[in-house]
Image (cartoon, rainbow, N blue to C red; front, top):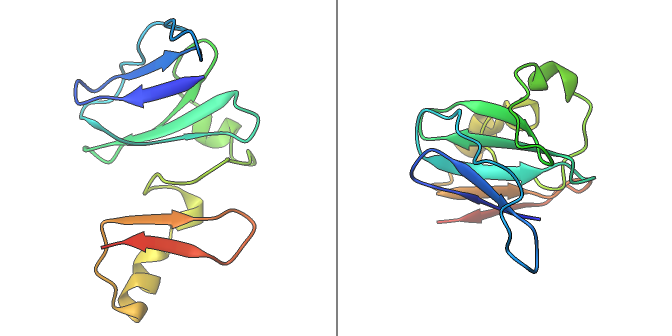
Length: 118
């Protein structure tokens, strides 16, 4: 599956490699999509938008999980690029200590590695 976040505030899911639309567009964000991550098993997504909303989705049906924050609190995520949530709660303190000016930050699960883009 491939998912695409758009400036029309929607997330689109396609099967791969035939590029058939997998479900209706996911349209609950109130601003443009900034980040999307899959759970490790590929069954769930979480996403953020320009309005700083963190939303959770069932990747197979495209339905929003309104209780996703609690239902997926122990979920293992393949990546974590969203800028909200428990794993990045204190990242501002780390940035202030290291005095980095950055646009993107990527945390690699299970390691102590951070990658940044200026």
